[in-house]
Length: 436
Ligand code: HOZ
Image (cartoon, rainbow, N blue to C red; front, side, top):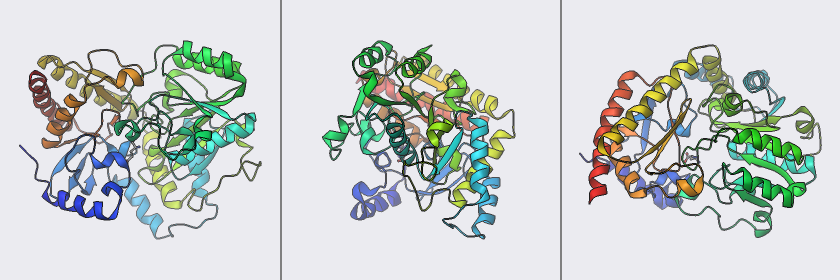
């Protein structure tokens, strides 16, 4: 049932002549799973179509932003009309305040919001702010959490860095890496021990409250509350990186779901409706240190770009005006995960399946996955078989076990049914390969 990817293969060969690895972001290269990445020609609703004409049900959703599905008519109409008013001014607009108000309404911990262009920019800026505010240098991150590709956080990083085995990238100065301390996720004893030794030197703890970059992992009961308590005790700022989980696990993100108030929050993905956006925000007294209110410098020619603000506003409008939005999205995601779990059980394949709101993930692992060390014991060979068998049947998943999957509001019951039929075949293929 091999896919015809001839045009994609030719396009990939040409891309490699022009760009490192043929891509502009590493996991897209399929190096972890082998084969040719389909080159995408178009997307609509729950489907994407490649340049060979293959159509797929898409659970990557541009790695999270496409919560309404692709080319949603309200978003595209808003963008079409915004386009005619010009694409960038480098000057204030009403749109920026409107989006900031909507973000603050959904995420009240963001008392002031600064728009940037990506999640990486948001976490980078939030760390600088935290260091300036606390007058401390060290920061704490968690093994397997990924917060973008800037120096302070490219240490024991997840996502593509974990997929390709470069969690500590060359090029990050040792002096910078030494200020980034790492802890295992879900391990309070390790955090207590570190804080006893160095708590008064640490500016911030940055955490994906629901990690999606070591695959999807869930915080254990009471874990985030304890992280909040300990950071407050030591005067350490708590930064929730909700670039992925924001507007995904709940309208107000993981912080709403678990009832935790961080000091700073980073967002991206959904709030840009598929255009490049990031944002950081938080306590008024901390955010007031940002230039021009305060001395901490951060700027951007395209920050608050009118097209990005327009797509974000249209997307959040659809989400926030519909009280059934999250219950329906969550129910679909649950049905998908339960069906995949049943397909695995029927074939005797051991998996760990995780889901919260519209984010999901699965590990080929017989044991619970609670942190990066346990995620890393998952069966990579089984994942490859699963991934390619799903792709061949028209289901587009992230090409790495260290990434999450995303449901959109436009995925239909028929899409889910078709996906589950494919999952039965793929789990049989995994079971067969396990026996070989
Ligand atoms: N770092 C993103 C996933 N966690 C991948 C982005 C992309 O390759 O488009």
